[in-house]
Length: 130
Image: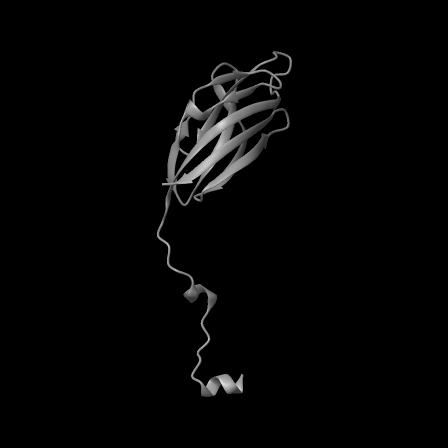
């Protein structure tokens, strides 16, 4: 270390070496959603919608094991981070959250398991930096 002092080398922190990044904007979409276990087992179907940040998808009916292409159900544009949530309809118009996951703004495809005590769904989400 004493040899370096004579050369005038100054330590640089890792943070200073990183280029500054602005706040990026992303889009979030669900590609597919699959019912693994239903909230309403006796009825045999669930009415489910997704909440992508502030965007609510259309309602879809699921049976056990059913996978649906949900790509056209909505897109959320966000900066930083957002949340994806699945909700199931109970008692004629009351929506009960199944589960919620945080999503960061970075190019990624994520496989999510969203579950409660009664329901379990798998979803594939894609996030794209725009």
